[in-house]
Amino acid sequence: MKVLVTGVCGQLGHDVVNELYKRGHEVTGTDIQEHYCGVDDGSAVTSAQYVPLDITDEGAVKRTIANLHPDAVIHCAGWTAVDAAEDMPGEADKINHLGTKYIAEGAAQADAKLLYISTDYVFGGKGERPWMSDSADFAPLNVYGATKLAGEEAVRQTLKKYFIVRISWAFGLNGKNFVRTMINIGKTHKSVRVVNDQIGTPTYTRDLARLLGDMIETEKYGCYHATNEGGYISWCDFCREIYRQCGLNTEVIPVSTEEYGLSRAARPQNSRLDKSKLALNGFAPLPDWRDALSRYLEEAKL
Image 1 (cartoon, rainbow, N blue to C red):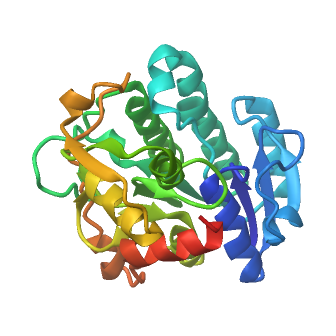
Image 2: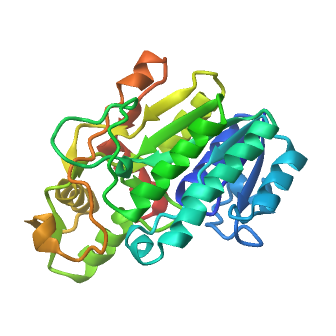
């Protein structure tokens, strides 16, 4: 199968290319940079075909997809700077909404299936009940969530052969993430304040890439939620486990979102995602997040 993957200079896109390459698919990766600029770990992503592409350029998107004529597109590219989106809503919308719309229209013209990566931020983040994958109870709290939801709607309106996969709290080798940040702080500080009233589950991009590979090889279209297993936790819980596995004695001080007070954009307190639809459609769940963290720390040599 010929697969086009966007955002390959990021955490997830990097791992998706490696996973698809390992499975024997013909993979082309794209990102806005002229040349691939992610981590060079000797893996498939550095040797796969790379095509520079600005997804906000409608003509370039549609020409690229038409020329490559893929069987499937996995759309990992996106604006992920949540706080910065509050100051640059137009730029975030160009990437997360319009860029996704152009990708969806190009996929439709090529008769390719599309898998779009979305986020828990499309929901309002209230209460304690997990959000169901087919829920339409959307109420994003910030610009980032609103633009990702607009991307979802563009996909739904344009295609029949699509997957929308919502994730949360992603971490992977190829980029910045909460794990790396907390380890760096833990090595230089005696204590750290971490929010304890935002609840969700981490997602290891290497595990997610395996699931996306399974998914794109089927026609079990629809909207799914995908994070690692192991129960719902707070960012504070996550940080404590990071330090435990790293052998750091840094004190983790739990604080409320209001007490933390450093975020420009509002964050959802309830990021619990119900993943039951995966099993109902025969997809294997992702491993426990503690196991995923252990493997990531070894892979990243942290």
